[in-house]
Length: 355
Length: 274
Image 1: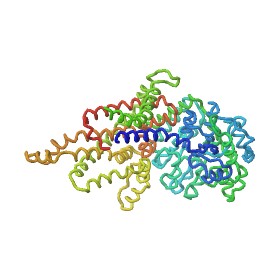
Image 2: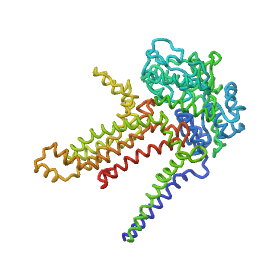
Image 3: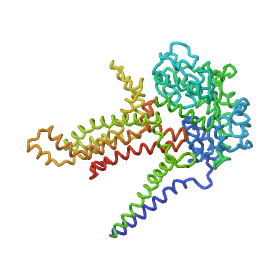
Image 4: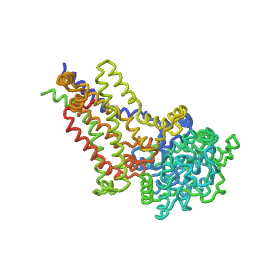
């Protein structure tokens, strides 16, 4: 009796071990259409995903990343295959150069006509011919400050080095944004590979470190709303949202210039559901959908038709969401700096962080 | 011995598990750690620990782990003594209370401390309401040590409690009969008998403290780089798996040392409460 019980038990356990993975992977029905989306955290109105499924019957499996640098190795290693990803300009350039992206079939994305021409033109800088990417959001990097916690109007990156604000400063915890601030303050390009300029920027960041409360990415928003810090480096898209929550906050593009960025939808080469991915991109370019996303995430939309649909005039003509870029000097877009350039920046950043 | 065969069969799931999630990953760590980007054999990744940034982060991690282990020890030992001395139904309840927070996700608990310790956070609001001086430890090494102690204290209490509560009361009575005062009983009887628990507790606090990157990232405001953070960033940010694995091998040396020490003192496996 005992023996047969043992035998049954063993059989059951072995069967469980062997079938669990099969069950887990095999739970999507054979003919079910899916699209695997990999996007920034809190970068879409979740209702849009549901309405996309309702309209097309394609199920969305949605993952999030925090920085471009975190996203890249996952896609490169092929650890997970996604169908649509939303990287930034310089990362798209890197992915194109490393042959990770598939050319888009614009016959499946007719709604591209709603995207403003100037955004497609500036995309050419990292994606010549607009072959691989469709702009989703754009913006600047600037300073968000709390009017009640600072003494003077702020217009320069140099305030991030002001001893007065020790412990009240939030810096971006991503290598390119941190170095951009220091390089711009010194009047250098944010895409420099010059050793002396980078060394100077590194020294500057080390000098700044005792004044910094924390290096953060997404948390800058909540900390500024909660009056946890006086000054923070932030993406312009977060500014409108934070102002809604805390009217004391003000966003400014520093006079030394800053980074203008575009995040665009791309399809990786190893995508399993390319047509679904194109349907997804096309859906995102629909004016009412782009508007819905804009209302939810408040990041500037390159969708001209969607901008026309914005009801509040002060938002439609907001200097934060839709700044007239010709008024600012020294604006730049990040470029991919090559594997060696990446390592150079990463090593310098590590030195700053370990100080 | 027919039953042996069945035991072997029963252990099959564990063996499959161990191979898939312990052996294969370990082999991969050694493969990546001892090769360069082109797959050629090299010690460069391991020797990279001598780079000032890496060495400093390892040194800092060792110091912080040591501090948190010592504090955990000082907090847990008296508590374990009290608990095992109670000999009532309540001691189980109190042990249960210490384990209770572990039912909640480790990340959430650490994130909660982030909110509690903030300059404008809950604790400081209460303190300033009571006109007491406020606490400014968030984003400092002190906050990291605090987070380590909070998260790993149960791992110190349980093995100690387990060992001390198993000490035969007759041994203690005998000590008293022979004229030992309470202090002598503690230092010459209880302490030596609880060594396996002490060693096991030290390992279970020291190893996770040494390797953590979550606590230092969340409570240190990304300003303090421990060796765990360096390794994590090599994998996630810099996509340099070779260097990340090389540094992991260095870290493994320290973990193996503490495991060897454990196995010397804890031959009976008495301290393994969990």
